Amino acid sequence: MKPLVFFSLTGQCRRFCDKLGLEQSAIELKPNQDFPELHAPFILLVPSYDEEDVALVDDFLEEAHANCLGFIGSGNRNFGPEFCKTARRYAQLYHLPVLYEFEFNGTTEDVLFVKGLLSHES
Ligand SMILES: Cc1cc2nc3c(=O)[nH]c(=O)nc-3n(C[C@H](O)[C@H](O)[C@H](O)COP(=O)(O)O)c2cc1C
Image (spheres, rainbow, N blue to C red):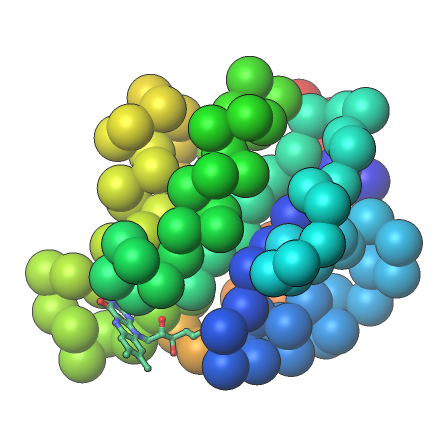
């Protein structure tokens, strides 16, 4: 299982991770805490906000992007072309793929898809 690093401002991404049932392989980035030390390539799940609201994730990625395999975005389709803009911004910045996008805390289908991504060998 690949580690899933995530950030959550209002709890939707945290709820999604709870539904994945990953226990210790889901690692939350929290303010006022040291960044996690990762010894394996990881996937990053991010909600979608303006840059200043995800500054913590920007800082984490600046340090850790070499080990990042790609991004999963959680957003709200009502934002139209800005849907999942944070995951897309990171993908562009670091030339890494957006692996999946879903709304809010995800459907059963979203959970199954992401479980598959995390357990896939490559
Ligand atoms: C102030 C605010 C701005 C948001 N901007 C966007 C956006 O630009 N694009 C998008 O897809 N979703 C946007 N959203 C929706 C959130 O990214 C989405 O609900 C996400 O699931 C929240 O995850 P979190 O509860 O883990 O923080 C916004 C939500 C809020 C409250």
